[in-house]
Image 1 (cartoon, one colour):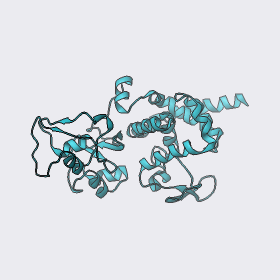
Image 2 (image 1 turned 30 degrees about the vertical axis):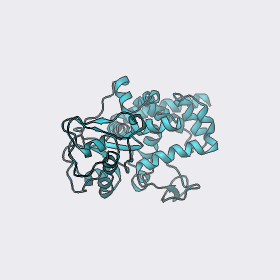
Image 3 (image 1 turned 30 degrees about the horizontal axis):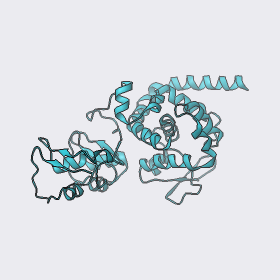
Image 4 (image 1 turned 60 degrees about the vertical axis):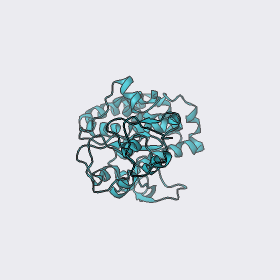
Length: 305
């Protein structure tokens, strides 16, 4: 039996290498887009980022499966005790019920909650955060998937794309760029937008000339909502480096800015300051006792927390 398993694993590696040139771009784009989200989930739930990314890639076909397109379901999670939206898809049986989400972000968050709250996955959380092999085999043993090669497929993806580097992260993109040499994607690079995390929110950097309508097609959030979250008009044209949040912003900056007021610099505006700290513009005015007509000056100090 062991010889058969070794043979199958070797065969899987060969087949994967054969298809690498064809799949590499799509897989790498997916990784670039969601790696920070996977790290953020890891730091909250202790699920290796490599496992989250590998499962997302495998279960969603790098975001291109029917489940991912129709229901933003990137992890193949079935309905079970689900009370939210659903979609149907042929799997082990015809037209099985799967969970559906408004956004990919919700799918990632639900995947983390699913693993961390189900008793059958409890033993996995006693493993080291860097033990992706143990996690892969543990997921299969706990019944996450019926494919007998599921664990080996996850391990192969992780090793092929070096996803285990993200399991050592202590923070998001800054850690990766500093310690592994991975470059942050330039806003000029015509790939999927990497998703970052800050102040209990997710955000991307816009590229020159993009619109909320263009971003909505990729992110899966309506142009109207994206514009509303960012306190802008949905018909506006965006500029390189504009921060675009994917959920409603917080009323204040993160805790570390409690005793660190913002000192106004040349080129600052109240809106740009609010975006920098991931907080609502109205809240920034209110915290500083200012009216909407107030003109800030270089050297002014503003409370952001």
